[in-house]
Amino acid sequence: MLTGLQVAVLGGDARQLEIIRKLTELDAKVYLVGFDQLEQSFTGAVKEKLAELPFNELDAIILPVAGLQPTGEIEAIFSSHHLRLTQGMLEKTPDHCILFTGISPPVLTKLAAQTGKTLIRLFDRDDVSIYNSIPTAEGAVMMAIQQTDFTIHGSSVAVLGMGRVGMSVARTFDSLGANVKLGARRSEHLARAIEMGLTPFSIDQLPKEAESLDIIINTIPSLVITAQSIARMKPHMLIIDLASKPGGTDFQFAKKRGIKAILALGLPGIVAPKTAGQILASVIADLLGDINTTKGD
Image: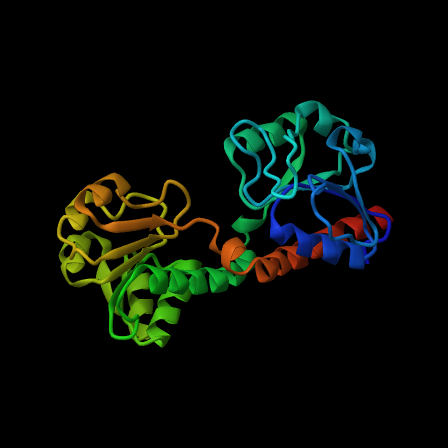
């Protein structure tokens, strides 16, 4: 239980609703900022204005998965108000107050450092990333179906990167009957592809491989789908880039060549916000439980 903990949820999207539900079920006192247009109510949660939050009593602040905007504003789809978390606000919080976010853009990283706050990047955790790879893979399938006029079954698909997301995506498309190739740099990743029954190739060979592909799904956060590869692609090629912004594709050259290339960010929150929210809620609740135990000691 989280009885006695005071947590502020600042903005966010539908995923935050699952976090709020979980925290209130565990008896935390939850303040909601940026939810003035949300008709749904939660027992144990109160809507509050940002300036009127009891910052000096907060044990944790939960930010949107994207952290803060470059301007310092907080994304809040359930509010029409502009919200901005400032250094002065954080300086009012207790020393043990923790900030939760999905990723941490420079403005948030700097703000946490200036105020001496612990910043937990949930998307850096292996458990969150592995769980999130499931809705990400399903979202990639959805996009492949929507953006092509041929079946996934029997198509030639290359997945670039053998990380947590790449492995789930490759396995999912393989199970749908695609002829999956896996592009990677490290020898152990190429070996894993063979173990999974997939066809491995070195990323350096992508220009040659591109000639016979129908779909490329990239998970590598660096420029790997270059003009050299795009120039050799068939007109019906689809590129789905799942890497963090700005992706790993030369989007400008792809557009020039008439190749459809999509930077697909935040798929878990788009295709399965309930599941994605439950994943975050479970991890946050566990971490807050540890904090509550420490406070009790």
